[in-house]
Length: 203
Image (cartoon, rainbow, N blue to C red; front, side, top):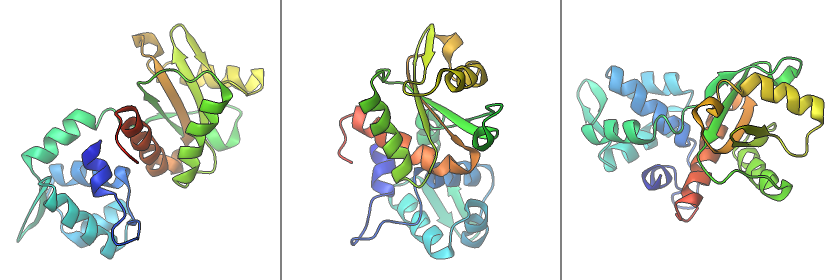
């Protein structure tokens, strides 16, 4: 987490145009094939300037090697992907009857399950601060999967929709976050902050 936080940190007072999701996606994409800056910027949906800054920071961290053909993920970059890539990989889901969540993403963060509304709202605010306007936060504590503060019919619909993809059957405990599919970068950014906080890293 510390590496992701360093790469995405504000520099000279300005927050970069990329977040943890872009870092992981860049490493994934260039681990499969060498990409130049222009091609990578298209793949990530970033400006060329943001992509240039991202690549510079990845090279500075030793996660990417640049040569005449383009960029490729280093052994250290592959290790980072292996260690945290799965932790920060949202799963597609669909909540039937909830228009903005019919095509959604869910991510389970291994942490103490949040049961009170104060903690739920605090986590939701992390996601909103990353740029996603809709985020549903709940807890996973087998055999329970709950979404405090929501009407019972909505909570039931959410439970039915995500029970198979959130790790309930595997006995996982933690925080579950559901967002519209367009909010993948915001979800990964918020999850990175939450995990960094769990690890005692300053945000």
